Structures are given as structure tokens and as C-alpha cells.
Image 1 (cartoon, rainbow, N blue to C red):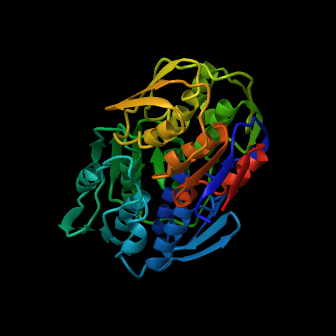
Image 2: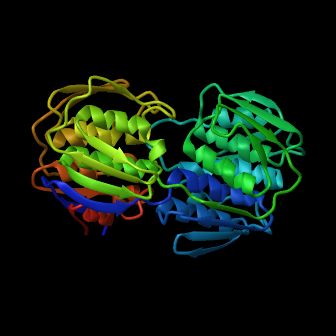
Length: 416
């Protein structure tokens, strides 16, 4: 059951609901460590990365109960500050437990996180920011030990608007002594969701949604609650599926205000998009048009997580397109698989040059990471014939049930 089989070449037509956001749920779950009591997280996606995060919370003493899409965490008693390598090395997002554990216990021992092959993604920025708050680090073989007698508020400016570093600073700062002012903070919607959850538990955070956050340390948090927002990357994935296949789809439970950079690109390829508060209607009647140039960027720019799905659409566009990947240096890993399916793509450094072909052809391809794996599923939908996408486990890290969602949209797809 590790492969996805797709019968491609058909237009999409149908409706599906969009799951809760992976990139919001993970830092919110990490933040429950700061609450010496119960936190209730609704609309939490049932995906592999969330399951790993729950196991990490349980490993340090949290009691966790899941009822469908509601997760209840009781972090009253933290018994351990050493995180098991088994789950830490599975996903990059485990690094955000550093700020939360330090905020709660002032100490953590953690293996270097894994789960990603799309770039180096060094954690130096995280460590340097936390060091400014009085945290000391000792590097051991394959492990990192961090501790502090006191965590002190400070003034910081990140050299790059890193989502992960922003999250770690927030998590360490909410229980710190004094004020923390963070300049060049990431502004992604997932940062806003984290801050809103922490505010529900009594944290004092100002400037939410801007690039300057002011966090006033408090002595203690109380019980917290939040509803995880919908996953903008999942919504974008399905919109690009429609762009490549053609058709007419409806997506519900969407934060439509978070997708303007995606709308711009889809409009350029020829899509017609209408949306209300939480529903997107999309029509694609013709072969995609090329996009002369698109560059990935931090929010509100075009998201790097949707670069691979967009490349797949441009592979069948009626002309030549150029993508610049400005976030991760190794995000063109699917190029060789798309070329095997008939695409004409040349990757040179951080640029991909795409000469659109009339069609792709079904092949046996293998996912190497989450978003590239989803893009290969899209390629299978677009292609003529049968495509088999191996290593489904990568796709399961971020999509609850991509096969059922796409079936709802009219795709012929199954897991075998």
C-alpha cells in the first residue's frame, strides 16, 4: 500500500473540503508544552507529521487524546527533557520543540532534526537567536544540548525571515523574563495561528501579522484553545491539479485571503477563479499558458511549497516559463522524474527553464519528499496513461488523504 496509481488525462470536476494546516498544527502542538494544563486543538489534520509530534509530546510526559480532528493535550507534568531520536529525525518540524521545552523546563537534549531533502536548512539562525536570550548550547555527536538558568527578553533581528526561527523565538520568549522584540519576523499565516493560540493561553504578543513582534514575558500560561486554519498549501495543490487537467472544481473550508500570490499565477496560466469567505470556485477551459518568470518568496510571495506543483502545470503549458527557487537550493529534485514523463525542463542553479509540451506520459516515478511527491501525483493526473507514484509515505506527511480528495474532484486514483 505504498504506491499511488493514477489513470490520467481526464478533466477534473467536483468538490472537496480542505484539511487543517500542517504548518500551523505542528508549532501549535509544540506550544502546548508551555501550558501546565489542558490545551484543545480543533481541526487538527490527521497526517504522519502530526502523529510524530504527538508521540514526541507523549515521550516527555504529556497526556494526549485524539477525537477525530480534535486533539487534547494535558502538559501538566513534564517528566523528561530528552527527545527520542526515533521521531525527531523523521521531521524537520521537531526543531520547534527546542523553544517550547526551553521555555518550560530550561533544558532540552535533541538530535538534529530530519525529514527533509529539499535543502541544507541549517539551524544556526535558531541557535544564534536563542543564545541572545541567555541559552547555552553544547554540541555532542548527532545531538544538541541546550540549557539556561534564566531566559531573558532581548532585542533581535533575524538575517532572514525564517519561519522556524521566528517560531522558536516566540516559544522561548512567552515565559521569558522581560520583553522580547523580534525584527524581520516571518509573517506567514501559520505564525499568526501560533500567536493566537498562545494569546488564548495568556501570552502577551503584539504586532501579530507584521514583521516586528513584541512579546512581553509572563510568569505562567493557562489552558489554551484554537481552531487550526485550513491548509493553504493543500488548497493550492488541488488548484494546480485543475490548472493542469482542466475542469471545474469547488474547494471548501479555505482561508481564501491567504492565497493571493497563487491566484496571480493561476490567472496568468488561464484559470478563472472566484471566491467567497471560505470557498473557491475555479474553472480551467484551455491548455495552460506559460508564465515568463515566477520567483518563490516568503509570505505573502509565491510559496516554495507550491513551486513543484506549479512546475508540473508549466510542463504542459503552451510556451516557455522560468521559475526561480529563492528559498531552498534543492527543490528541483522532481525534474528528473518529470523529464522521464516527457517534460522538457532544465534546472541550472536556482533556475528551472521549462519548455511546455503538449502532454506528459504515464510512468513509474518515486517521491523523494513531501511537496515533490504531491507534484508527481499531479503529473500523473495530467499525463496520458497510467502513472505509479512510489514512496507514498512522504506525501502522507502533509496530506490527510490526497487520493480521496482528488477522487472527490473526479480523478481516477487509488492506493495499492
